[in-house]
Image 1 (cartoon, each protein chain N blue to C red):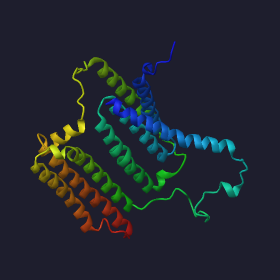
Image 2: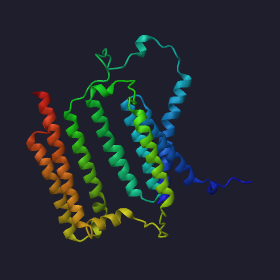
Image 3: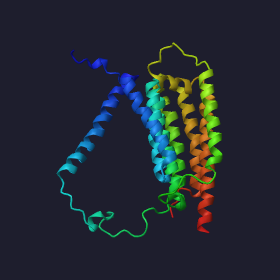
Image 4: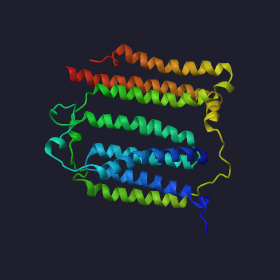
Length: 176
Length: 118
């Protein structure tokens, strides 16, 4: 039988690779003895989620996931860990004395989530994904969603001022 | 959509393969004679001082926050830039309002000396 390249289930392969990234990374986050490595595992997990967006035909969202979460939020978390000398030590145990207390709570949460996933009827849209999402987003931002678009700017500004205010206070306290 | 990303996938596979293959070839060819001097952390030929896991200054955090905020700003402006030629002119004014509102935050940080390095 001749080899037919179109028979390769590319989508399935990509899905499994991305799932391995997302779940493997998530397990790494909670099991790594070094908090710094945990943060790097988080990057891997977030990268896997970006792959899902590609598979769901949300290309712009995938790029945003990479830019904002992998590129910026992960850096912020790494920075936060690097400021805390105590957390940087290698061989820290992630478990504390209260692990047995959280175990039943986590199990109940898991059971509830599984129950919800199984009972909710997930509506499936038969609509074809639109081609150029970025162009349409641009029209939406400056069209029917103009006010939210401008409010986002104010929100970002508030976040910036708040972040500077808090970090500045910390720096001044350190210098004093 | 997936077809557009196929190209990226192929490119990513090639960019991952080249350094890995190079490292494997180097690993196969190189002689293995480790000694304590070779195992030392390289720091421009100078002996490393103290612990490698040092605490960073909290000042870097301000830069990280500013980076995150402007990263998100870029995400919102990117669709606008793509659709610019099809949008009416007043959209440009709204985009400028968007940038000016964010610039206020930066101006605040600037005046507060958050960008000042000491």
